[in-house]
Length: 131
Image (cartoon, rainbow, N blue to C red; front, top):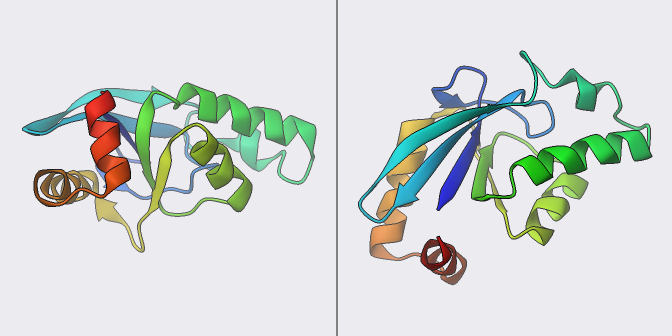
């Protein structure tokens, strides 16, 4: 199962979904995880999304494009996400996970792995079986 992390430094979950210029993509298995790629949307912040906020269809198209490029992931960790973007992810079967504060990606992965091993909720169990 692929898991994405909105990050500015490839180490921490520290970015808003729309603003994130890149996502660290990991493959999570029941016995561990591995970084498979850094998926870039922009150098630094994703200003193409930021600058079109409130501009209707052009903004929606840019967010839709980002969601489509992440649709192979089952979970996306981030610091914030707007309601419309969260709904768009959910419709694709992607679970957005908001962290309350900046957290190391490895810490988030270890907690997720522990949950997978001990008591995964039904949606997570299903996501792990599919991949």
